[in-house]
Image: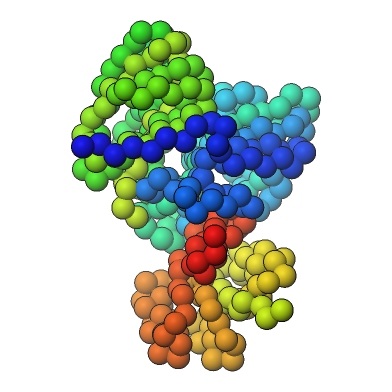
Length: 238
Length: 101
């Protein structure tokens, strides 16, 4: 029988740094909740809003697969591998921090906030060579169907990471339903609702709710209203 | 107040310095940072270390060697792999390892 965990949006951790407002699904920085450390290999799900012209100055990372998904506005990326890029809504960015990387992320717009998801997944191998990639997705490819945006395979759709993880985005009209099949035994899926109301099997979720489901091969997804969501399939054992 | 001693081993000098600085910002903790196995083993013998963080660039064989050396000297020491290289996960890793809720 499937096991599940529900994280209502209002129960997430919250940090207000003035220029940065962040909701933390899992323990992060000064938010610590021993009941919310990770969902399998999914360690960080931050729902960030950065004021115009502000951002994260240069800072290091190691041994983590870091995925950013912009929701509104433009984010300017610079890193120690000499990558300079701007990502916007519809793009996905991935960094394998591996042995060590420095990067900065700034709001490209001086007036308007940039909103994005910052997602960290434990790698399946430590100390890999650092790498950066980004991809522009075709947003119409998620209308009333699941769009794979991340996998473990460089030749598959979307970006890839060092982990047996698959991410899908969906933008469903009210009443649309589908089934999700788990790719790999032992994996679970963390569902994050970006907008609208969604049912996973019989569990109703609202905007910004999170729901983990595991010990199952499949589950149903039904849009109770027009809804946008992200599915993150990750190994449950790390 | 007696500080909790934490040893950090990381091959990346800037990341090591960052982790040590972040830990030392907490008044109840004191971090010692080492880049090499030899430095780490020597430092471990000179401090009453409760927790070791294994950071970036430490190979599995080095990690095994270090764990054997540390536990031979102090079987109670907690040894955990550090992920992320900054403030994001650091405090949760330390709280979890030290059993702090």
